[in-house]
Length: 271
Ligand code: AMP
Image 1 (cartoon, rainbow, N blue to C red):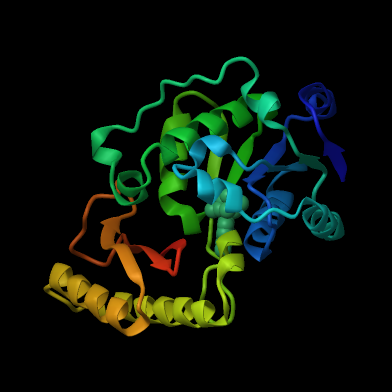
Image 2: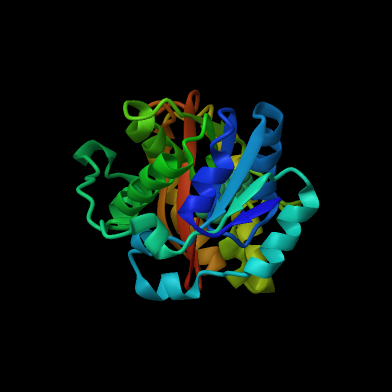
């Protein structure tokens, strides 16, 4: 695994290869990230992982400062997989250079779910992904369905600009059904128990919604129930079509999207 710390080394290292799989991350590597690497390794000749905590996608400075990082541990884990050919760890200047401005705008119909609640977040995500894609020029980019809206917006945004295909990869959960996430590091044992209860409840709810004629009402009741029982705040719980992220009233072709706070930790998932 070659560690790349600047852009000239990046272009030199990648120049000989055309069949490159790319796994962009913000570090704190866990099994969710490793599953994307596995899929890339099987699909492409070379796999490159990036670790970059992009300040421009945080709508809250404190959240950025508190984002869990452990680069030494990440390098050790990635090396051990023997599946990563290149690890790119850029600094801010390598991504943004002298051109920090971007005029990316999320259009009104896409301002749902996290795009509604995290102002500027996806503008920052699309900007950094475009910059990373230009630098790495991968054949395929592997992204987790855990962040389905992120995958959806990046796929649509890059579709007409790059030949790169964006490959969705299924969400990896632990035994207690919690989706693995770097942010889980901020939860204490009680928080983990709550996240697990919520995940199991929503998996069950989705099965029950198949026969429901009153989906909207059911979701409202479920929000109240979970908020009261677990003493958490649910930002949204919505059934939406995976094709266009519009509100859906049938389970088929849809996912149940949730964002919630346990103490001050914001988590997202979909089922
Ligand atoms: P992050 O480091 O959180 O920005 O995530 C980097 C990539 O890993 C994104 O494409 C995420 O969707 C993906 N990812 C994060 N958690 C999981 C998970 N539990 N299962 C599958 N993919 C994941």
